[in-house]
Length: 310
Image 1 (tube, rainbow, N blue to C red):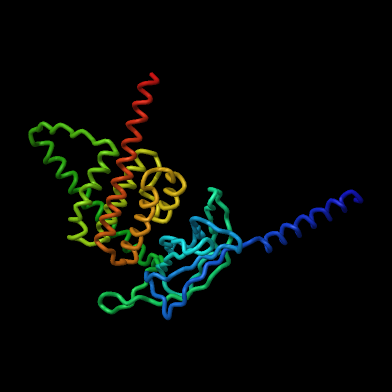
Image 2 (cartoon, rainbow, N blue to C red; image 1 turned 60 degrees about the vertical axis):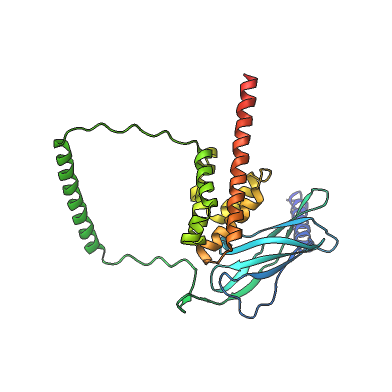
């Protein structure tokens, strides 16, 4: 019992010192510029201040996973201790920004993390094209009513479909067999992605269908390549998760940062329906092509090195 008391006191002292260190640790500050009535999808200037005495070349802001309705675009350096970014909120009502983590890249290449406090925002609804209020919050899942009636309808539809399929199959069996055409050779993942991106660089999709369809096709081409080439379930990731993966796993690849910004703008084009300039969309398609061209050159270099080693 006497031995346990000093141990218990030491644990209490360590916990107190840890709590004091957490409280006194230097913190960064996220400060949205005053806006009269913030609206969904409308950019809000966000100032990022580093602790006194800390100067950095660049910063990255990591938000909690449950704040995917927030989009941060860019972080331009104003001076060594402050940066300016754009914040877009994709839902209405009272929302919170943070607590987040600001990762600062110092002049000597070191990366230092600073926590931030939580910031509250009130976002108004944005009027739609026809004047109606539009909210981008995901709809609630409603309870499934009329279960037995819908079950009967579903069973009947299945029976009709099965009978129709049987009749069509029997009719096809009575027809003469025809020679099937030869299967076309599948393109390698990199060539398929480049073919799709180069088609989008003509801007025909953008001009005919707008930025939403352009960015959807562009992001799908890049996602499909990464999924097939690296075995990552990129087709199932959100745009924010794609940005984090690119900055974590492809940070030293060509055009990785412009590609990350492409997915940020893709989220704005698809969900906030933010109007984007034609020149910006063309530059994003060029960034995707540059990334894929670098990936193809990297793959060829690896094949050459492997052949030389053999």
